[in-house]
Image (cartoon, rainbow, N blue to C red):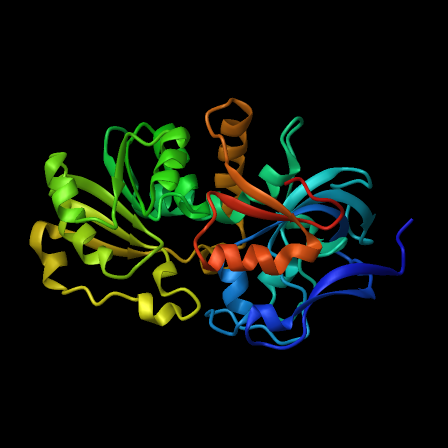
Length: 349
């Protein structure tokens, strides 16, 4: 049985998230021919979700709409062409609203539509909040490190913003791939979280990053820089790359609600020196252009590693739907460690 109405977080207008996000009663979704509707147990949110609400992300949305990208839940209804899934099956994946800008129904709701072809069966015994926080962060990082940078066992990876959702996934995947991981964070508590996740070297990059790297004999010996932060530390990290080093551009979180201010201006001669490569990471666009083929392959590999205990995703905190504005504030204030999830039905604080 699917009720005709449901509770959902609605963005009434594009602008400041604190002023425009409200929990409301709205019409429940119905699946298209190749879609399913799930009862949402958990919805992962990230920095881009907040930027979309404020109209500051490259992906534009039209209000009103429901935010939320990563979801995990139980199938409650099937489209007429869906044969590979069944009612009652627990699945996770990406809400249609992220994949199609014309869709207004995201995951911060009691019910959510997903494409049947783009969801994955949730492994037995894996927390739904772990599943909900998995595809975007881990999918992005695996694509960056394996498909783009082609990291090799024994290489050294430097991660900026290592305590965030993207950063923690990079520590986890980097260690699983046999790399040495250098985690850069902005506080002692975040460095401790990075240590627990498995980082080999911990650096407080609010200090002199160049001096910190030199004191550990790492300056000029970094093989890959993974940068979701941008800002002033990017150039220092770029200069720390070894011969043939790869610099992965993943985002500009240092700009906060004005991400353009976090875009660094790196002199191109630094790419020429040591034959360094600057490589962009745009997981969502790659996923769409590749019709999810490569991403599904990556997800299957990672799910196997989760089940084998080789990957251990970190969830920062689970907020009830009514506290989503607080979750957004914590994300934008860079107060969280790992992934943030929203539970439409209950809180697990």
